[in-house]
Length: 217
Image (cartoon, rainbow, N blue to C red):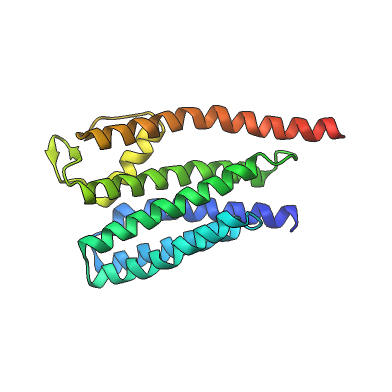
């Protein structure tokens, strides 16, 4: 596979993640909007799997989680169910977790720091936000009232957890959404730590990969 093809796959993945994040707060809670979100999610799943080309087991694990996600999401639009939500978010946690591991291993490969690697680094950062977004939603579905919005329990919409995940990962923390249970607080603290460590670890891995290539030359 050529460098240009790898760059395009990484770029498409980054754009699909951004599109999904931008559409969700504007289209949720409307049936037609939920269908568009599902289409955007489907595109994200496909581009992620394509970007995991050559990652072997992780790619197949991601495919195994992605197929039921689409079916459950589509069913949930017309027949919402508490257990469907649990299965959906659990599978999304698994999918984004496997995909994040696959992208992380890619950054460690020796070679020049190409545009594809930069796109991949941004995609991995957004992927981590999606992983925690799914985990926060799963936590709230299993234990309602784990998070509070402006002091009121049980009012955080699905896109609200995406917002919460992003500001926690970036360690901004406005404080309008807060975890109020031990489980929610531990997950939020872990995401904050992951956001801080991501920058240092990613830069170190990219530089180390480049130095290995330079020394081999």
